[in-house]
Amino acid sequence: MSRSWAFASNYLIYSAMAVYTLAFLAHAIETAWAVKVPNDTTKTLDYKRTEKVARIATAMMILGFILLFVGVATRGISAGRVPWGNMYEFSITGALAFTGAYLVALLKYDLRWLGLLVSISVLLTLGTAVTVLYVPSAPLVPALKSPWLIIHVSTAIISGGVFLLANVIAAAYLYLDNMETKGERTAWAKRLPSLEVLDQLSYRLVAFVFPLWTFSVIAGAIWAESAWGRYWGWDPKETWAFITWVAYAAYLHARVTVGWRGRRAAWLCLLAGSTFLFNYVYVNIWGTGKHTYSGL
Image 1 (tube, one colour):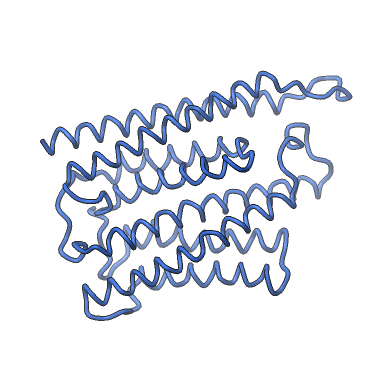
Image 2 (spheres, rainbow, N blue to C red; image 1 turned 90 degrees about the horizontal axis):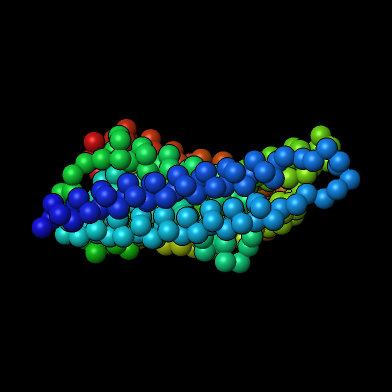
């Protein structure tokens, strides 16, 4: 029975990748049509075709999210546990959280212009997961057999998805800011939000999820005491989780008390995001210490 669930999980994840590919192609077509400028620059661009394509792309993102969600769930069923026991499972769940953060934000903000970056990021993550990181489902190692696994890892994954979305927006801010510094925005870039809106949105996302990340770090310390008899041991993963916390705390502090806005705040946001990615990729795969659960 577990093999059947494992097969179903693999099939659903590959299906999600196919749908995300369609979403990427639709977003690419939408972007290409938007970039194309008519000869008569006095006329406004007609985005009726791009609007239809953008809606198709969003529908594909939603369908891909649903397929991936079911794929992650069936992976857990095949293993008889929550699907967060190795790097493969972290990656597919991380891609799910990133897509989910984008789709939830899309309910309030018009972020379809980010769809191209989100879809290609998810495809790269899933592609790496199924080709490099895949391991058959297996029971958890003893240290992970704890209720804190659900509490700590779920909050960390959700936080990571929102952090990365904030970083993509910060990167978009820097790109558009550089464009405006050199002159006027191009025709397609004028459709994108103002720098002020991007700056505020990136900040709001970080401010929203930072308490959850704080809770995740604390929950990890409580779990460490339960598993290893100490709350903190400066293990590489613990250390980099704390560095990420400090970096995002510095970002929020710089904005609220020092008044950092715009370019400096965006760069600091990207720096904080890079510490999270370093912890997620390098420390999980090549790091040493007690948090060696990559399964590779």
